[in-house]
Each structure stands twice: as C-alpha cells, then as structure tokens.
Image (cartoon, rainbow, N blue to C red):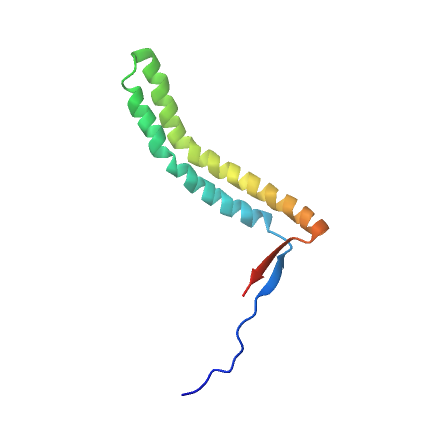
Length: 106
C-alpha cells in the first residue's frame, strides 16, 4: 500500500473585484424569466375563475389573466437583465473603493 503524503488543502480567501455587467444581466434575465414562468398557472387560474363572472366583467378579467400569463415572464426577464447589468456596474464602482467581496475557497 502506498501512503499519500500530500498535505490537506487549506482554505484560501479570494476577492471578487469585478463582475461582468452583460454576463450578470444575461444570467439574471434567464433566472427571472424562469421565475416568471412559475406564475403562469396562477394567472390562468384567475382567468378560469373569471369565466364565472357576469359578462361585462368577464372579458376584462380573461384578457388580464391571459395577458399577464404571456407577458410576465418577458417583463421579468427584461427587468432581470436591466437590473443585473446596473447592479454589476454599481458593484464594480463600489468594489474599487472598498475592495470587493471576500470569499473563502478550498
């Protein structure tokens, strides 16, 4: 039997100095778009309940529920991209002042 004489890995502290704004924007756009998809069943259920309402009110609620089901994932994705890119830009400015976030890796 051979013995492994390598020392155990020691934790190392690393610092996140910069975040690429477009990359973070793309990541958050996809994540927020997926979160927006989670809400689709709720809007469709709202539309289903609207079919039990009186006729003048029914049309508005059906359109509202279907419209939200279609556009909420798109709006979430767009807002995720915009705020992700802005957040990365702000982080990069602040990280220059204070040095960024320290992360311990092994």
